[in-house]
Length: 304
Length: 262
Image (tube, rainbow over all chains, first blue to last red; front, top):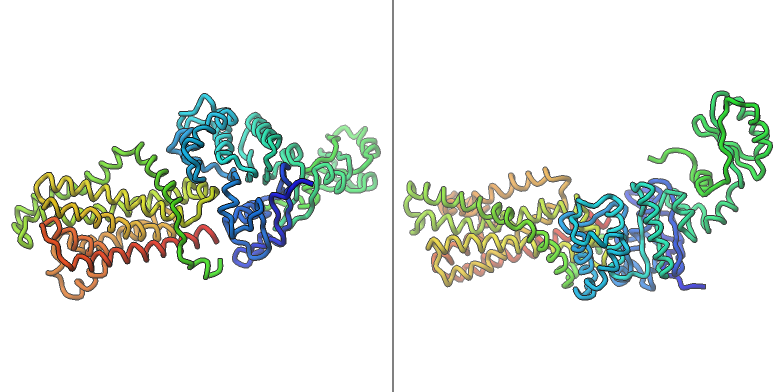
């Protein structure tokens, strides 16, 4: 059993009488990549801010790297890195200056910061752009610089709030690669995301949060195995409504979103058989994934 | 946030220096336009009004109008330098660029950030005031050894207005919000603080109001110093400025806590 680096018990926070976090228990072990999943407004960012001691909880306890938070949040944050949801790099500084200035906030000595910079630039894939002005960087480069900045103090744990939102697939895969590298070095990652693919690929443990509460937790595989049928058939096209009436007898769970019908079953052979000869219906047969679990647990309604 | 925590006295640490140095590094890159903006405007006003109006007015309180106005402008230039930095620039860093959020993710507290911005804005005010003093001295309108004593006064004016500015910043909804403060508070203050004309000639009710204004106290110290006098009354004026600075900083910290930490 590896050491616990972050634990919350009964964490609560309300804003103007509305409960945003309603009794959250989280335990994160050293070296794992821990995912906080949830729809928009589920309370993910608030949980991160509470763990960092940036806002005070209304109830519950937090321990971050052995320090009680918020009381000793400053001491805990000295060994923590943060990648915020929105880039807040200094637009007036070069790549290197961003790292140097941020290192000073940790009380690091100039010599120590400068020694770390080549490795950080390398890590961010910005080795040739040490003196580049910030506005010349692409979105992916800025994200990688933000990640490198979060490592300036060589943290034991890195919090990431939606690390790949807004990036193209190439940039996203590069970030994933870099994050895996961090866990291989033994660092602990806590990330929020609403990309199920990201969570499935990166996280060893995750919790699904909805309306400020944890609705499920476990490894991605355990969640898929434990919460949902193994196979999915998605069907759409003219006449799907009449077909759905029949499909309900062929699969244990049949759901509809707009014009698409989702059939969930351990064995979808009867569903596929009934689709043969229905040339007007288009369908996709695939194994169930984390997104199916997520939608089952948090519903298919829009949250904005 | 419980009231006890919201209203708790700020805990200060030397970490604020890192915030000051961040702003200093940015300023170094933009120094020339910044100096021009801070200095050219009051100097053009000073030379225009000082010589132009001075030719019509003759002597004012036993000195030339240029010398009278110059002392006033040392105070008002310091006031505006601290104000613009603590309003527009601090608001950019707090609200638009989210620089403060980034800093708070490091082992820095909100007090460190507000203190860093406070001392930084006062530093810019000090620079503006000292530049004015240098120009005035070069033109022979300041008594040299005592003009040096005006330097810490300028810093005190800066700390007072930086604190007020940061308190307003914590309430701001956008850049336009600052127009209220600039138009409704600072412009009348400039008129009532003895910058352009002596307050002593005004009706008593207005003199009472003037005595509450921090700029009035700043000008009341700088003017005799540049004229070569040192009086005991200056300590009282300095105490009012110090009170504005300290109480203003506390209010700025509380309002910023309310804005960002709750």
